[in-house]
Image (tube, rainbow over all chains, first blue to last red; front, side, top):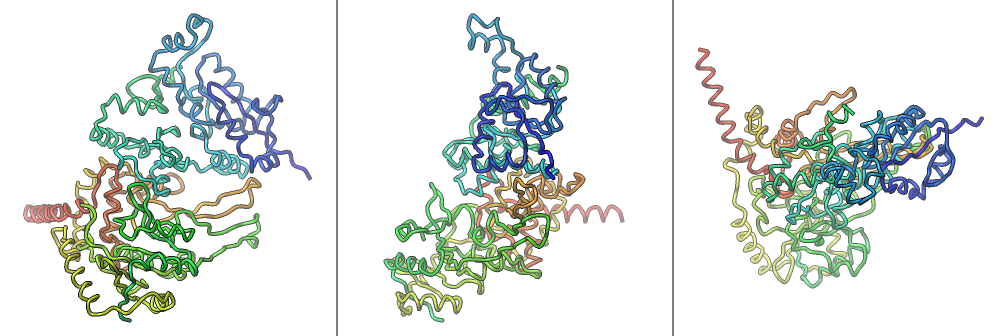
Length: 258
Length: 361
């Protein structure tokens, strides 16, 4: 007796579509995924459109008021909505433009044609519609996408880490960047990437957002000792986590109001 | 079993001999620091650094791996489950005395009935060859206080001391005795060798002063007295709760168990991974209740595990004074400093109690 398979879809907003590419990069698992689910909408891979989805994955930030309607439509057609990647989860890098000023950003990008285009504060998808789960990262780790898919197929809550990147970094026995007098967001950033950046010579920018219980006081104290000013610290936070910034828009209150 | 001598220029041969029979783990450079790694090829023997200061992670990672498969299950039928408990014969070369003590502690914890079969199987298949230290390598160490500057009684196989052109090798077990005999490159230590070792020991002792203001036999009681101290809140202000201290700790052995499902949503693996009491999810249970919600209570819990609970449970040191937790702490939180401060904290609280008693009379 053939049961109909759960349907999943992918949708994109303001993003580079790299997270959907990460899904296609699950080369070893793609056939198993296709065996377990029907992908009914996925612009990056197929032309089809569908009337409903069991699980809708949304990549990209909400950066145009006119996108609200499209997001609401997806929400109304989907059983479960999963935000896919940093842009969808926290607004990602796009939020930088909020601090720069929308007009200035429009001028820089579109020059004299700036008036032709619409823009608004870059916000996470959550600012427009209810999101059930988040797959963080820039880009998303493939393993976490698979964890979410398998968990939802099994009817259980996906396990998304809520501890700092330091945990994974230490298990890889990386030399701590703080030991090399470099600053890193690791102690505040959400793990789940297996400490990609510090393991390959970079530092952590908290692309997977902050843990739910970051010690901001400790961050300010420690960074001050490293010679960083408040502005330096905020710059560091804003790269991927401007949406959490308390000193500037977009605040949660603003998200609510819109 | 009398001490043996291994000429230093035979160390590489000895390592290659070990590789013939065992997987060999040894300290190698990792950037400006050191790590225990498996030596994969005979050429890699040259990377072994017996003169390392301290490794980032302790050798516990070979006995209690950070990620470990416990069970494979094929579907919803429990009979399809398989628990592959096995271990390859392994030698850990170059463990410092404090790490040998730490392994004795994890032995006691993991082998207490019901013994952990995954740990026990690996431990039984592992030989430990220690290497002596010359003194402290950073300001956070206090092995002299924790009595971990010499190897523990038993639990190790060979223990080497660097005498310049040769290693003075003490034999700790029958397996160790068989090992050096089979290697065929050791000779029995002579008078000069013993004398040189004595000189080494005298020099070493002078490099290992005690750093706590009290004898550690009082540590568990001082911990108890300082339970309500404001010290823990003050220290926790700087704590990121990042779990680094427990991950680098040679005596921490807590783990979490998770089932990883395959895409058929029925088969998969059950695996465990290191967990940390510093993470806010550690003491969270179903329904959202968290028994150690505040980071100060988590930080205090670790200090108590290290200074009191583990010792009371196992009779072995919960902290071996290696200093890893403090050296690796981004916020410079020092367990040595905390243990120094509790002497005063406990005295203050004793005074307060006495004053309160007087007032009530």
